[in-house]
Amino acid sequence: MGFIIRNAFSLDIESTVIKHKGYIPDRYTCEAQNFSPSLSWKDAPANTKTFVLIIDDQDADFKPWAHWILFNIPCDVMEIKENISAENLAETGIIQGKNDFGEIGYGGPCPPKGKPHRYFLKLYALDETLSLKEGATKKEVLDSISGHILAETKLVSSYQCLKED
Image 1 (cartoon, rainbow, N blue to C red):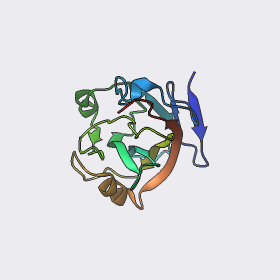
Image 2 (image 1 turned 60 degrees about the vertical axis):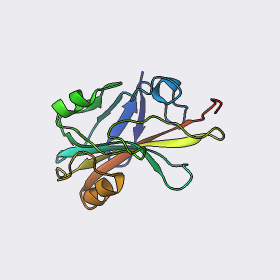
Image 3 (image 1 turned 45 degrees about the vertical axis):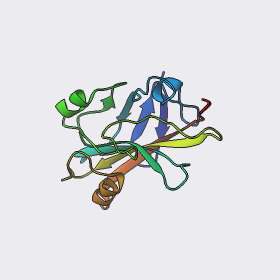
Image 4 (image 1 turned 90 degrees about the vertical axis):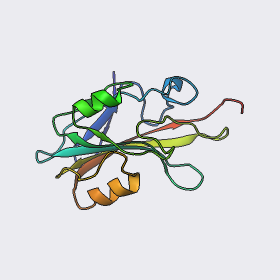
């Protein structure tokens, strides 16, 4: 059973592993396997050409911290499997950006010990394909999608680091 968030634009995002307004399971964080979560979506506008997915920590100290940036997700791709490899993403035409850990790919939640942090899993349906290369930053992706967003939705969840330093 998945958790679905509906917005005014019809675009829905869901996850079988992350509950909206719940806690992110350890396996998707730096405290365990650091697996990327499974996600799926539906009901995109008919003229969608590509999707963008950005996962970020809205409670990071200095700025929202990007954990995963995927762009040019083809309009016929409606899911990302758990712990998907870079090769499998590339085979479908999906391009990964550089997260704020300075790496290309997924970097799971890893906040400092203390209060829970909120993680936003944001999906955008676009009317174009972005002309960015692998390793593009969140800012570059957001600048490129400006004026091309047909619909957007998000799933919000939390994580609190409990490990000792």
